[in-house]
Image 1 (tube, rainbow, N blue to C red):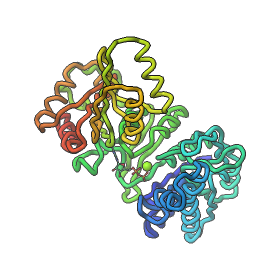
Image 2: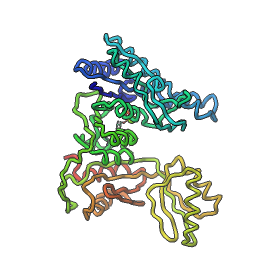
Image 3: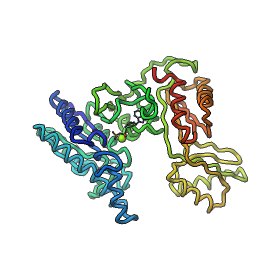
Length: 407
Ligand code: ADP
Ligand code: MG
């Protein structure tokens, strides 16, 4: 059926002029004989009248302790407004379009409000519209439970909607339109010479997204990988070719033995708002460690950059969990040290597997900028360093330059 999913982020639908641009891109697909299914985010970013954060603020002003069910109802409004306006913009250009909420589009989720997971998609409503020659315009970021309660899919949820619909409708491709030319070697807001990556594999973009590169949401990548779906990241504001995301690793088993090899790294990602904890332990007993971990699990505190030693445990948490954790540690009588205001910088590349000397280059590059590494960790394809947030920009640029990523 030649279905193509075209998802447009908040900045892409922010003004009338842009919405017209978006409508023309959709119409262009239709004219090429494809069946476009449009997914839209709420209009604009934080502070704009219909943006998600604005709606949450409005609800919080009336009553702070509202239920997550009602919070989901108000959050879902942003995309509803956006879908109606986008459908109208397409109609104004002479094409038939129909706005659909998540529920109307057949997106069924579990009942975890605020972070619901899609469990089923009923494709009928969308397929019927396509058969009638109409363009469905679906609200991103939301679905509904079996019993019809509105749910939202968590931050970046519109990317998830696009991937879920792509999988369910067996789309040829899922295009994610945003405000940059594609997936880049670093956030272009920090690194002006960051370069577009033409083709990237699921594993690498997943790592990048998990480690802070906002350009696509990790859950959308997971769904794409599961369904062997091709994603394309494109710019609404330009006609740049964009980035193709698929299973192609981009190199065919070539061995990299030397840390000075070209193209060793693919990208540098960063994540702000991290707090480091160092908790002292008197005795190195398994029971004590187990008890400690159970307490964290019970309080739903997930930890990262984990280094455990016999006399102390060092790890990080998202800063929004820091206060909760401090209270917990105090109540349990632990001695601990807190370092707030940190950033995690991650170097990503599937070619670094087993190559000696990569960390040495990272240490040297950061030292040359007087950036102190507070902690580090690595996997087969990543090396992460924790630094002070005030050093973040310097650190990302130093690594980008050290590994010649702008070439
Ligand atoms: P949208 O509203 O379209 O979903 P997002 O703000 O979620 O857009 O994602 C796009 C932003 O991601 C860009 O403006 C850019 O600043 C940021 N970004 C962070 N890391 C990267 C990267 N490696 N490549 C491209 N963009 C990135
Ligand atoms: Mg986004």
